[in-house]
Length: 306
Length: 306
Image (tube, rainbow over all chains, first blue to last red; front, side, top):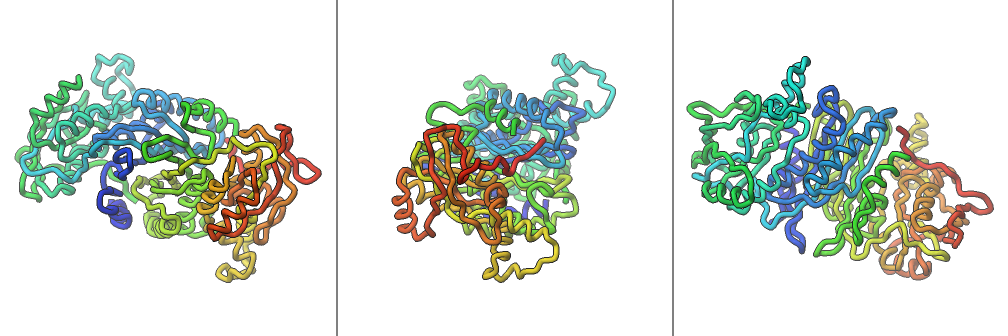
């Protein structure tokens, strides 16, 4: 993480009116409105395990995680570039990978317009997405007394990974009446919350972030960027998820946002035909406060080490 | 290559007025003028060997190859996203990598505005670049009798790689009076031809491509896309380069373009204060013709195998 922070500082925040490193996506003014840019890499053995999900799931997920960054700005995705590194002898994987990419591109209305294919020692996929938002929602503008909401229950992705790793699968992944199957699906085929991010923006969200690294860590980031305290008093749990998975498991693509008026957010979600968001807590005027119920917010989350 | 072609066909050419896969960069209309998007990945052991160039050179080159794709559309780069995969224990490489990236970003006026850092089994860098051009030059509009020009002598990059691989370095890489040193620099720190691409566009270039995979292969691509024949009657050789390196070595970032009036191209280059381009041949009306002097154009070039 120190490296990430350091690189961020090297790159700088950008000139006035632009956002460079440090938010879910970069924001760049253009005559047609703000352009959003983001890119993420998924690496075999680090971000995915092909004994637990298909290559098509990987394609879906690679696009989904970058689209989620656009959703977290209250934006909509426009176009994607995909670069793939594939080991020699595994070119056949590409067909399935693009099956998943294309399914996601259709689902998120974000066509893949180019990229690069290269050979290399292991499978890796990078997706860059360009998007737009009339007025992008940053991480940094939450205010004391804003309500904190999430767009859905948390921890499903981490629970799904745990269940799939459990080896003897005791559930039918195709039977989505079972919470275990829904958790496995949340891990394999996360759904970025584009419509929800848009509704949150319209509701006047002051700050927003996606929860890919877990609520505890991503809430800290939002609070740090905004200079506010945060108090969480409830956490909606995803299918088959433990509280720990909901707080620190990561691999969730729900959005966390701060908004002055939670009722207005509920209205906007309802008008858009979306499931209602969950109020999980509020922002406070003590910038050092990081509280979960009566105790401290846990420290953990998905972080790379070098 | 079959996979690349197949994926290209899967992605499709895009709706009218857009260019998706199949050119140096994607072209997307926007209220501020056409947006260009491109991305390339460099993988350790495939595209670079850190015993032959520095990690800072790698950073430079990663940005340069994507900027070159923008130059090949007659465009100018605007912003870059950089995603880096770095093995555990080698986080220290990141500092040097970003030294090279930042130097290139300044040199090409293309700031790095975001991206991703992740751990993984080997070092890999992906750069996505957004650019713009008033009227992007595609590969596909060359016409019979158009002159074929290149923006500089070829084969220097491949020669540099050969000399560096030679082991016992018998030249001083810092003494750029020596052709060997200039070749090594062409391999380590290629210069994308942004100003040259712009001048070619202003001169009315009908088709353009960068020579990253070698003149023989990239000229075939331009000719195939345009449905014209091509005859090459001279090839300017870069420092220390053989004819074979100039034709099939790849790793050159000069531009190849077709233009109805070569004199006009020379004028535009002169007005822009650029070294004059080289006429290497012309397009013909026999779409199957691929000729070098009295013989056939060679088949080789930089291609991945899976």
